[in-house]
Image 1 (cartoon, rainbow, N blue to C red):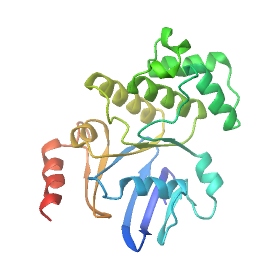
Image 2 (cartoon, rainbow, N blue to C red; image 1 turned 180 degrees about the vertical axis):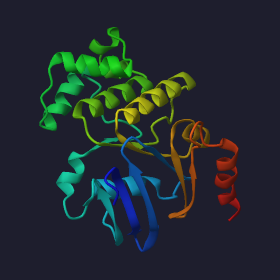
Image 3 (cartoon, one colour; image 1 turned 90 degrees about the vertical axis):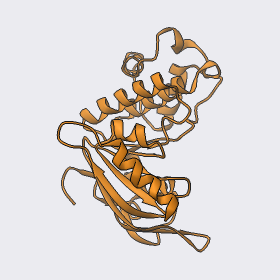
Image 4 (cartoon, rainbow, N blue to C red; image 1 turned 90 degrees about the horizontal axis):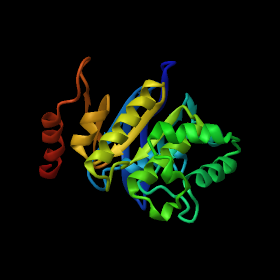
Length: 241
């Protein structure tokens, strides 16, 4: 495992109810890299995230976090990860600052009020919105609070599960800018999505999942982005296989 590698799947296999959900998939995500797992419903994307989080039993191979086998040291693996689900589980009756303070306390982290506001500045949540209860937030605003929490926890790794689902185009662009900034700061980011265009705009490499198998991989050129049409053709071909 290379020193800069933060996440690694090594011939990872997962079964559920007698069905093979992941079949010997292998990939790695380095420090400062954004890796996208692309696939349709049931391809195994979210199961891959669950394997890194230790939420599903692994039937073969292993998932490594900072070189550690998740199965051997789950607590250490989870300390290194911030996870952003498709629908962030935040409290509607609390405002942004209160949510952040509460979840940081659960994680055993103490942060000054100035640090909390600095994280909200970084994600672009307006000062006026910070004292408003989250029941009045759009999904894009909620995602900003969840990312602010990840920033404050200052983990090496960020796992994103369909992070732009339901966001409008402007919110998606803002989110992509934020993710690029986190990668530039040295975070390793694994994003699972079925959005071909969005993935090509933001990630450094794409792994295409089909039926639990990693069937193709695409890398961005040195100066540019992954070609959307090439990936779209490969993604669409799964419907005919």
